[in-house]
Image 1 (cartoon, rainbow, N blue to C red):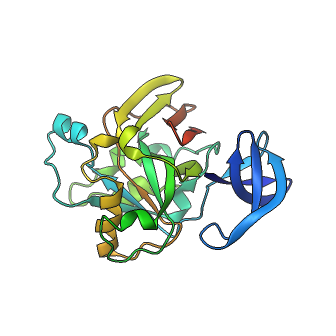
Image 2: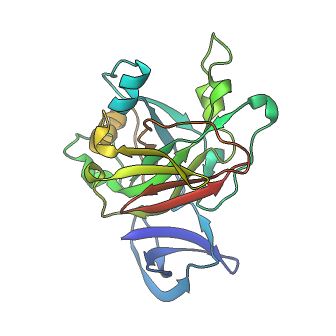
Length: 254
């Protein structure tokens, strides 16, 4: 199943993506729901984020290839930060560049985990029961701002501008991260292509470990981190994040 949300003729709709049609559902994605019988062509709709996260947690240094190339130590526990709700953005949404003094902004193509059931102190073996599915993500970063002040790394500010937490276009419930790769294209040119199997902390372990720190609620999103190929974008760049089995997330920056 691939779940999506959109705006069509002034209405917010959600349901299952079936080919080029939306099979509209009623109820709660994370609770009781049913198909309404209404079907809407996807062409021409305004895509929305496939869920409304209460929080978005994002990983840093979670791929072995990137750690090796950059000389980073392999972490013994997940290293993560929080992206604020104003940063959430959907497939097709134009992303405004921050003011020029912020400096350059980089893309980061990633896999997103969507929590489907409350998780508190769960084990890795139990984690699958708490994952609804997966989405594509683009974790934008103001790279010059991040370490501008040597006394304080500005993770929240550098990652929290409006539109810097893009995810979608759907939540895919039947997806195996172990056999998939992330491709990121900028202006049609491939910039990233890395295997998700290279993760230091794979999805089930991330859910388990983060649930020891804080309760994960339905709709919360975990970004799994990125690997090699991160570069700054030029204004007007279209960035596409593709994961076979999920789909393609595309946005224009600046």
